[in-house]
Amino acid sequence: MPQPDRYPGRPVPRQLTLVGTVFVLLAIAVAAYGLGTRGAQNARLHALTEAEAAPVVALVTPTSVQNHEALDLPGRLQAYIQAPIYARVPGYLKSWKHDIGSKVKAGDVLAEIDTPDLDQQLMQARADLSVAKANAKLAQISAERWQSLASTDAVAKQDVDTRTFTWNANIAQVKAAQANVDRLVAEEVFKRLVAPFDGIVTARDTDIGALINVGAAGGTELFVVSEVGKLRVYVNVPQNYVPSVPPGTKATISVPEHPGKTYSGMLEASSQAVNPSTGTTLMQLIVDNSAGEMMPGDYTSIHLQIASTAHVLSVPSSALIFDARGLSVATVGSQNRVLLKPVSIGRDLGAVVELTSGLAENDRVIENPPDGIGNGTQVRLAGAAPSGADGGKARNKNEKG
Picture 1 (spheres, one colour):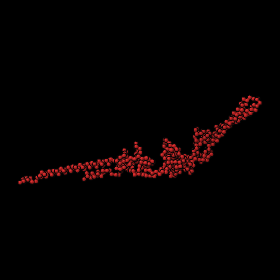
Picture 2: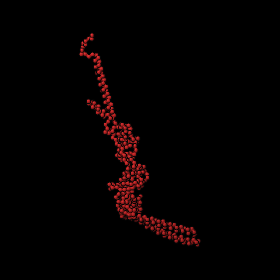
Picture 3: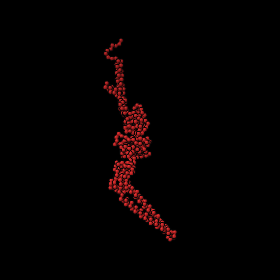
Picture 4: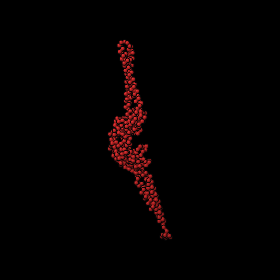
């Protein structure tokens, strides 16, 4: 017969064991949940940190354009023909007939020079010529007499020859004296300075009574006459554009004193040589100036239109990367990782550059790549939320809850 329980409210040992086991399992579950939650939070924090560390970049799409190339170059207008007028004889300026701005015809007298020294030299040369002619006449008479006596054996043949040669020498002296007179007479013509062609007097650097020296070496130019019915423009064309600018290329020209107005010109000739110091080729354009609105010496802006059918891609110049590998552009590929592509520049337009190779129209180009960027670099697009941001917000909400 079983013994009655002396403590009826006390739990039996089996119940105690079951309760203890439940408490232990509950504690283990709570600890495991806490460790798992902390691990997930750490993982989300790491992902968020990595996402925040990736540089933020803005993207642009290459623009496809029809490449109608044009060159805008500076130039300086020059007279089609320009002649500085120097004196050929020394003296003093007697008078001048035309001042700057005067229109002159070929042969018009610009100025006259008083040449007292030349006048005296001419007088002396004419006197010397007269003396030479007199000596030649006397030598002729003497030689003819001795030649008539030679047939009678009254004189020696040596004396006849001497008289004959003296006559010939005097004839040569007459010719020399005559040549000297002719030279001085020719120089007398240069006492009058004349215009060599139709044009305008663009400079006068002398005045009445001024001492005149001879030639460009010892004296300054007295006048400058310019033919301005058409003008020349010399322009330096970059080497890579020379094949695209053949003779006959049309040009549009503008000058500062006539804003908004343009003039037509044509490329006439090329030097066919590259200046090694500038990398350019000198070319000459001809501009019609029959209206007389442009002036020699004018600064001018020259627009050369170069027809081309090539398609090019343009990107901002800030997208270019210059390093030891050369010129490249940073693009964004799959998984937002950088891919550097080498490119070639067609034209540099300042804020925009035209690329002839290296890019495709669907490439995503980084507008302003940060320093140190390279192939495979993880980037974050401007305006996109970083990876793990939503997890971070959830974490914050859990912490508050």
